Length: 537
Image (tube, rainbow, N blue to C red; front, top):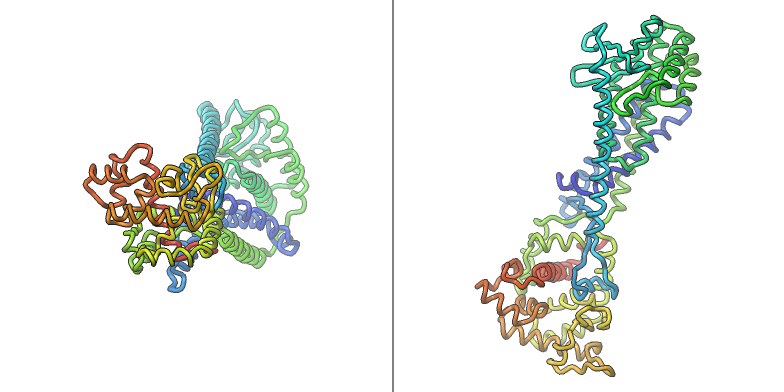
């Protein structure tokens, strides 16, 4: 579950949740029947619950549902975890070609790193702005003096601000009033009541939560729409509660709001972490004043319950729908190990469920382009399969060597011009090796492009390698890096285990990354070839 929560894929998924929650919450509150029967405070509570429900459903409930599906007996290969965006490529084009494209497929890793850097930079910038505002706020508090204390709420007066606002810390709340408000006792009374109502509603606590979300989803425009809407609802709810208690007249309260707005034009408050009586804009102030004269108590319970029920159903449906549109999620190491353990084909090539192999399979599964290319390569393999199996049987070679052209070329007869080492054909034979095996390669003719001649040469070469190393996996390694380098590596390490050789520091530097990638691709290809359901959509 932690891998799911921390993945880049999930980050974008939760950004979608922020958008979905906002759209559906606004649509539901716009329904005339519900809108007419809900008070402002209940609209505020509903909006907050919608935001939290969206985040929780998309972050937790949906992955849990998918994990439950993966445990069903007839769903052995269902997703367990989401991953970040995946790729399936290799620095050497000869191997990257396995995805069935003649063109080079650039690695997605640099792009993912760039996205991650942008996200981290944005979060860092948001935090810098927030802490800069906090320093300004602390400076105001430092020079303010306390005149009243209401339970845990301290009422401060400041000469450096011209409008009332409130702010909260753990177990302590502050109401900051401008000194000049002392000249107007009615405004002072209403300002204190207004800010106390914000604290009672939990607005000062919510503003910290919204600031945290702003750090994380700084580039999501729907988060800023959420912040604006919740800020509006907080002010409307606060005004409504004060007016409905009938301890002050709408006209007096409206005058207080206008005075606060006029004074606020003379100073600039910190933009984060505080709630001011004047609200957030002139247009909102105008709406607040107009609505003061229309507030009345409403029957809200049924409307509120209906709104919550609709929102949960709609958001859950959206989460499951988006989940279904996502690329297939990765399988676990345990699942791949179980497949390998049950198989008979794994013994010939010593197939293992190493982390590299599982990652390679998941890179194909979780990337639409890679999985589509692999399926296309398997379809092309089906055309060659009868001929190749006949050749394998006649030479007593293992049938799973079908995976080698899958890795090398994706079963495309590729021209040497698309490869930096001039390898060609479905077996990706380089010119020097081809000539050594008796193929004609010149300006007029290239036997590597003749499927029958190239196959005969490739199988002859593989048989020679098997005779030399007495192991088909080592023969595959030698096919990639050459028999001399393979023999030198075995001598240096004293091991004949393919993965020990691939991870050995004795391996030539130019093969350090390549051989591990090649082995992972070969083993993954063998597994997928025998279990194509792993990449079926």
